[in-house]
Image (cartoon, rainbow, N blue to C red; front, side, top):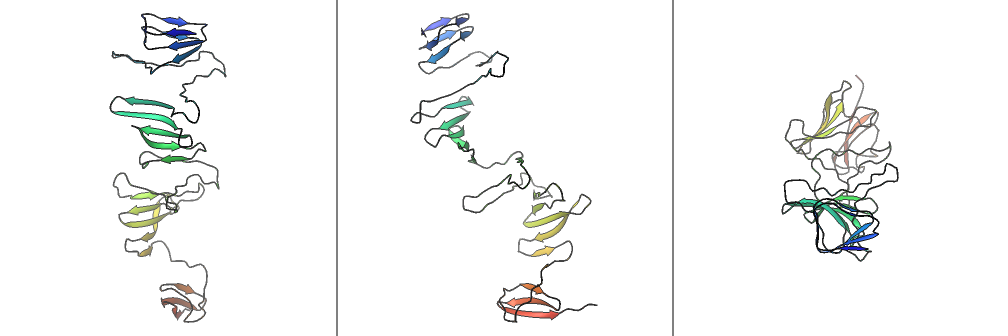
Length: 266
């Protein structure tokens, strides 16, 4: 074991064959400190350069084999210890740290000036503290597998799209199964529009929901696929319900109140 304390080295210092080197209060080296064994820091330690050069703290394994690894590690002693962290920053302006919260089920946090902005549990679940608003988030997975799910804390699943810049295209959510044409849903002003591919690579408005709640079917007739015949004019129904069979079209004009109109070929 070797103890270095209040040592100033102008050139290189090599400590080979010494199992453990303890660095004490002040060790200044003008060249390179090479330690073959382990270096133990007995107090707060730093690597500082006062000129306009670059401070490099490098961990290098020069062996060219598959088992030759290089690591930078920060550890604390046991579950009752503090929080190990590795960070970068600009003095007095901004810092970022990857830190394990020892008191929070060993959750890994990305800290910005001390506050968590991203966290990962030991099971792999990720959580963002703020909104993710820049860049593109792409999730890939096998078919018939949920590859992206956004859940709201209130119990309802929610996926939110926000336009970063104004444009005539509005805010679009594109849905594509990879095989058929996709139907993008977009918000234009206060109107929700559901488009469809018209077979020639152009999106065409199919359904529009206005801010007043009016539904407009733009492309083609409204299709009610299944026949239904109210049992009587007083059958259960909600105002606005529409049904049909081979002889009549039925409209519920008030609660449990139906009227009908006969239909015929022409």
